[in-house]
Length: 394
Image (cartoon, rainbow, N blue to C red; front, side):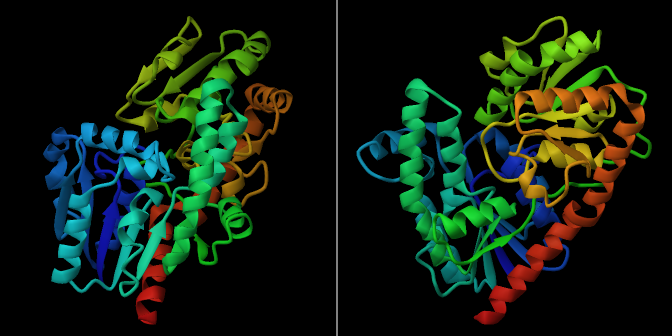
């Protein structure tokens, strides 16, 4: 097949989030099919990574989107109803580039990444299109409302209402993909989207592997993720304030490590004798190897969390709130312990920290789940099947 991948972010380096997903899917799909990339260039320094993408894609089409232009888009959107996240990525140049590409190429299918890019492909019903979402975006904003107060809560409510009104655009695509059954159910039942299917996030098990995790380690609790992402910022603040002090009392010498790029000031302020904020880590695998448990106390957000999948792949046990767990299609204990409130979260962490054999049992179960369901090779094959499904219809 001849396929176009339309990404909202320049997908390299593939460290976290959207970049990681699109890179790993394309890397594998490109082994059997002719693939092309269309994406924004927001930072000129990303051009140094162009050769890495050219190893995977037959062509790479870049549309420049300066930050000043994006901020102007958002200011103009205040008077309208378009979600600010969508307005941020508005570009006449992108519309023009797409029209040019579709005139030059006969693509068998197009992979459109994120709700932000839906504005560019909703009007091309003659080309088979998949809209691939990290989560049900309206559900994400609903949870942000519930977890915030004051001015932030007001803004979150405005964006939630805008997204809810905008999301029916999903019905204009042949398929909409989300990471979890929870997101799928929300879009079908609350937003009346009729074409929603599952494509889970994945893990590169050639990168995140651990032949024999050292379960004697019992002094490090780890959190990973982009530390300018609001759900992650809230999660580490909540853990440091409401959970970690009790665990410290029960386990003297315990440390909490927050590992992830771009930590905001609110995260840096948590640093202390027993809490470390690392900033960017090139090789997260080595950090996972030091952890007794990985914690995912996310109180809002949606989709499947990379931090959970990576820890499972490394055979490290995880304690998670509903966010980060519901999309896994597993029972509590199969790599991840589900804890739905503060008391339960403390007790779950405590039980793992004081029982080596329990850590090993949960950790090994998680690795087994990853190998069968969440390896990027498995996920990319599923995406390939979706491409085949919609291309045959046309």
